[in-house]
Each structure stands twice: as structure tokens, then as C-alpha cells.
Image 1 (tube, rainbow, N blue to C red):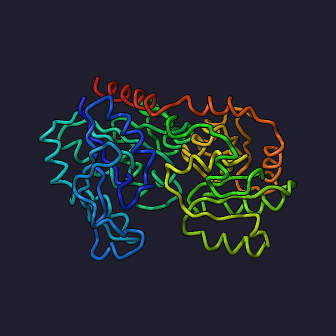
Image 2: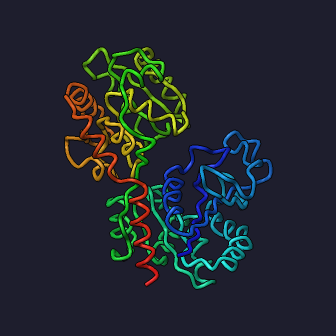
Image 3: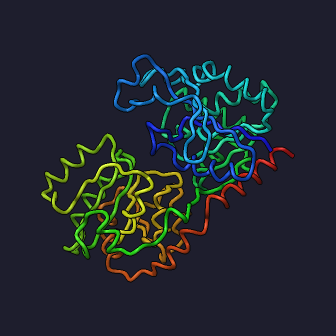
Length: 389
């Protein structure tokens, strides 16, 4: 089986933390089938002068990245504006490169990991060359769920037209079936996986020492992008209601709300109890999970959050919002506590309960480690085989 996987949400030297879940799945898939990976990089004059895009000019066309050979053709993108044009610009810019790849290697399946602009353009290639197309949907942003835009209509039309859809949660499947009108039979749920060699349970005090934390204190960990949908303002408000005085909130990550959240903590007078650490490399997050007593994800919406899977694999219980794919990951109270999104009072109560409960960490770690990326890749191959029949 020959597959070409195309996704602009993929890590590289300049963006090492971008699309890690896509990389991990394709890494496992590449061990099992002939899989070529294309991760297009945006181009616009002087784009690299912006902090967000710094370093992209130096990414080669073919990059060896974490045991994978990854192609990085460029596509023209206008930052912030005319987003409804991204799909056509993406298609036109990449058409010569992708067309030549398909002709040279005769791929049977075009595999996409973002609907727009990737699969939107991919549908044109699939029709032009008579190939099957599969797309994975990973969250509300990937299907423009909260938008009212021309781009959303393009996403809906693309999802209705592809040969098969892989959804990372039951919630995502129901959204595209019930609200977008996609045929139920052409959507398969395959959650994200875990690499048990990277995420596993270690000694708590050793992990706290590695993170430079005070030993023996109670820690609540929030590790995420600092953006509105992650609900960290609710977490900070909830932290005021946590009764245990020996507890510190650790916020690990970066994003557009960082300054606002830091100011909020300062205004509330809890700067010594709420600590910000910025973004850390993905391979270093294991020590932060293991240093914590509870992991908290108070999101307003989610797909299939890998941080929950990784935390569980480290034996750390979860307190999280009852949204998206999170209930699929926390099936009962042996592994965590679910609360309504945007409810600081319920969140504070759940955090107190989690901090005071005696958890079976070994049971949590075993449960969190069961769905490996290799197992995920095997399920994906089954979908590919089904599409080719």
C-alpha cells in the first residue's frame, strides 16, 4: 500500500511543538506501510520577520525529522486576511509538486490531517488522478465548527465529498454527521495514541526536583496553549476556592492570553501560588506530569487532547471539562473527575476532591498506556484497506 500524507500542521525545526500528534501517528504508520510525508510551509514576502514565522526560511525542501523524511514545499498564504482564498492558493502553489509526486510514486491513497486548506485542495488532486482520499478531523478548529463563514461551507462540502473520515472522538463524529450531514457509515472513530517509551510513571519527588519545584508540596498542573478556549481564567478563579493551603498551580505553556492571565493572577494577589513556566519541549513534559498531583484541563471545547492521554500514562488523575472527546478518555471516576465547562465553583470542588483522594496511580498509568500509536496505526490501515476495496 502506497500512501501520501499531507498536512501543514506538522512539526519542523522552527515549529517543534506544532502538530506533534500528527507526527506520532505518521511515524507509527511509516513503520508499517509505504508512507510519504509532505508538510507544506506557508510563504509570504517578509513573513519570516514576524516572530510566529521566524526560522521558516531555513527549512529545507526535504528534512530528516525524528526518523522521518519530510517534504516541505512552499505555499502562498496571506496572513490574517482572505482566509476563504487559502484553499485555492494552497492548491495552485502545491499542484506542480504534488502532481509530480503522485505520477512518480502512484499513491493509492491521499491522507490528510486538516480539512481546510489541505483536504480541500486534496479533493481536487484525488479527482484529477482518480485516487482515494481520507481526512482526519481533530477538533472544532479543524472543521471551522464555531465559524459562520464561506470557509465553513467549503469544509462541509469537502467532508461530504471525501471517501472516508477519521474522527478522533465520538463527539467529532456526531458533529459532522448530525450537523454537517455527512454519512455516518463513512466516519470511523480512532482516538489519538501514546508512546509508552516517552510517557510513563516516575518518582514524584525526582520529577519535582527536575522541575525546580519545592519538594513535597501539592501541585495542580495545567499544560496547554494559553488561549481563550482552554478556560484557564476559570481555573485561576477556581484555584481561589481550593481549600488546601499547601497547593500550587503550575501553568506550563505559551499563547496570546499569557500576559492577561499573569495580570489576573497579580490582581488576585496569588502570584506566589500560581506559577507560569512558559512553553517546554514536548519530550520534557513527562517530568511535569510526574511532578503533579492532579492534571487540570478546563477547556471550553476539545477534540481528543493528547495532554490528557499523556497525563494518564504517567499515572496522574485528571480534572477536566466534560466536553469534546474528554469523556471518551475518562470513562469513570477511577481516572479523574469531569465538570461543566466554564464553572469555577464546580471546578474548585473537583480539584479539592482530587487532591484529597487516594488514587491508584499504577491503575491509571496502565489504563493511559493501553492505546499506543502502533495500535492507532493498525486501525488507520484497516480504514485504508476498507476504502480501497
